[in-house]
Length: 114
Image 1 (spheres, helix red, strand yellow):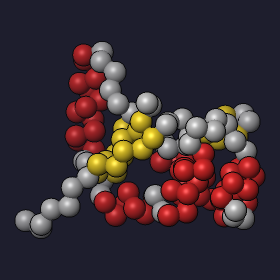
Image 2 (cartoon, one colour):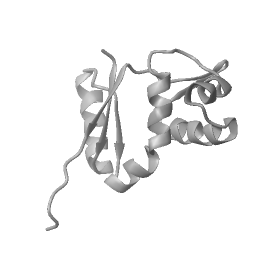
Image 3 (cartoon, helix red, strand yellow):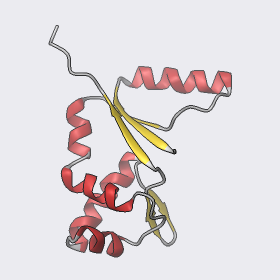
C-alpha cells in the first residue's frame, strides 16, 4: 500500500531525514511534515479530508469532477484543491489533479507543556 505519513516535527528533523536518505540511498516512506499541530489542522480541514477521501484510488480528476463527488461548489473546491496542492498532498497534471496515495497515516503526539 502506498501510504503518506503526515506528522508534526521541526524543519531540522525533516532535513536530517532527507540528508540521511541521500547518504544511504534508501527509499523512505512518503512524508509531509508540519511545524505545529495547528498548522496541520489548519491545512487539513474537514472539507479537505472529504476531498482526499473522494479522490483516493481514482487517478486524475478534474476539479469539476472532484466538486461533483463531494457535492460542493466548484469555486470552493478549487480553493481547497489548491491548498492541498500547496501542501504536497495532491499532484497536478495536464488533465487535472490526483491524490497519488492509497492511504494517509497521521502521526503526532500531544504532550503536557514543559
